[in-house]
Image (tube, rainbow, N blue to C red; front, side):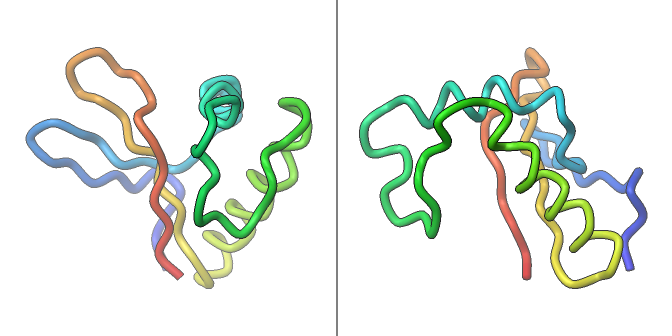
Length: 86
């Protein structure tokens, strides 16, 4: 099990637990053509639709069934993406 406050770092990025504050940036990314290519889900119609996937990510993390990390730029603290380990 990995604790909720666990982070990983590289020289350029911090990987951390997803947070609700990430949702506007994620939603914005889904507005670009091709951003969902290869994904197993359709782009959300609004930001509220991203709350359930966030809760699912946190539940999976807590149970040890999967870990989704938000990738944050160390330089400017901007969310750059996500990665999941299942």
